Image (cartoon, rainbow, N blue to C red):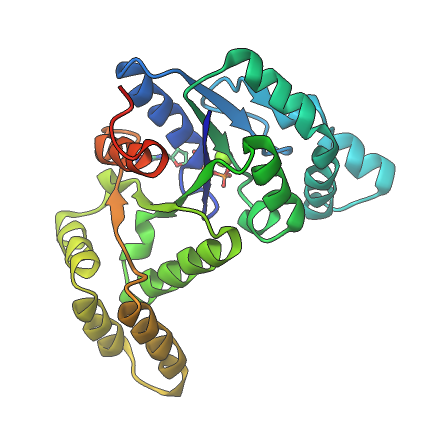
Length: 251
Ligand SMILES: Nc1nc2c(ncn2[C@@H]2O[C@H](COP(=O)(O)OP(=O)(O)OP(=O)(O)O)[C@@H](O)[C@H]2O)c(=O)[nH]1
Ligand SMILES: [Mg+2]
């Protein structure tokens, strides 16, 4: 079982991508299971095969421990650590080729807490990659996109596993921003130029240096343009998943 943990900015389309990617894998006759790790979600676009809500109760966490909404989410994910073996058992019964894991909207909950990394390692026996999804809104300004690159790098530093970066909802991008975004991705110097043109003061200097460093070490990598609405980019995304997990074609 190859695990892909879908992380990303709040509302970027992680859960919707779990559905559209599941469909894309099915169309290649690849067995796929989905896991919901968001304890607080009320509605999901897909039907999860394994659901953290079967093991921890968000509402009860709030009532019993008098926690706020985020504190209760944290407590739920911490408590879920004790149920990893049961979730793993459910998945082993299904035995899919790929497991798509949808993570909570509050990215820090999963990505920056030890319980998140523990769940990822234990559930997958350390056979997992991270899919980082950022909303196409972040292509409106160079400084927004630079912030996304720093965020993607911080996720990479946290998990230290192969990472596939994607921009979501590209169907919403006007052509001009779409084309400019592709240029920024293929030529980081153009991105830097645009970033510095927005403003150039002491505050931008730190980001500029970080950006230079990322360019120098070749850490910017690729961002795949995707849309769950039109299916754009899902072939590329699946190809990357195969490269990461099987070194080529699945079958
Ligand atoms: N136009 C467009 N809308 C999308 C796309 N993907 C998701 N959306 C919409 O974006 C909104 C958020 O989608 P979700 O899949 O719930 O996003 P999420 O990242 O799981 O959200 P949280 O878990 O709350 O962080 C919904 O209204 C989706 O219908 C897309 O490719 N194109
Ligand atoms: Mg979601």
